Length: 339
Ligand SMILES: *Cc1c(COP(=O)(O)O)cnc(C)c1O
Image 1 (tube, protein in one colour):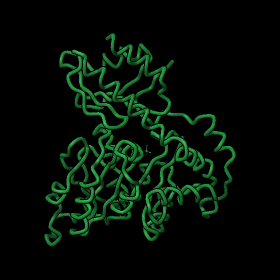
Image 2 (spheres, rainbow, N blue to C red; image 1 turned 120 degrees about the vertical axis):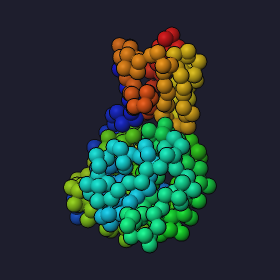
Image 3 (cartoon, rainbow, N blue to C red; image 1 turned 135 degrees about the horizontal axis):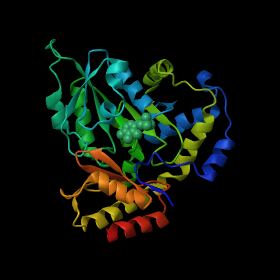
């Protein structure tokens, strides 16, 4: 039994999901003639109460497209210091859009309306880059699966409106936030100009993200996606995996969250653990007491067939997911408890 807790991206499509994909009706999506892709885009847009959606091969491409749509070269965007759009998209912000990032020192990957307000460059001071976009992440990745309060998001929206800034949500794990905080997706749809959502993380589909926005924005997104090489043909087979996930797997996220909390509770009791960050969803970040090495610890777990990751700054990360089953969980708890 190999247990991979490195990321929620490691899941493989279940037999039922593959069966659903196998039976998908497909067409050429470059001509917008794939009924399954069209259905997915409409369904996801409806969930968030937004006008339109566009299917992407990756979350990175969906985020990068949004940034391109909301900025001009030379502009600046505001994000948290841990933001995926800054750290893990290979410099795409500057490569694709010619934009710089103003990174804020947020709380577990979340930035506040006040922080944003004080980071906006004076648009009349032509020496500075023009601030034109705010990118938020929910849940946060390196921030440890933290979720924004709707109230704070409302305040951030007000700051953006008052300063003529667009607001994008990197919602790779928005499903986890919706479940954990019992939030209404339509509230997110009202606040954000664009939202990218992912199907190949907690929801367990093999491939795919959807970018949401108003009709005009998504029409422009079609050209950017084409430029980036993301226009696909019979992608309905992939969209079917996402549709299956939307229908069946959202409710299973509560199990991932419960298991992450239970692992955190085991770690908190251990003398070799220095700190455990709060667990709100499926990501658990912790540090070891100073005398222990992260690499040696990871290697020790590996010998027990358990993989976890080192994410820098002495932090270790565990991510629970659909393919992390109860038998595995029982085993991991036993191993950690004995260490
Ligand atoms: C995984 C992830 C993405 C997108 O990643 P892809 O691997 O390109 O699909 C974007 N934002 C966050 C926060 C993520 O965790």
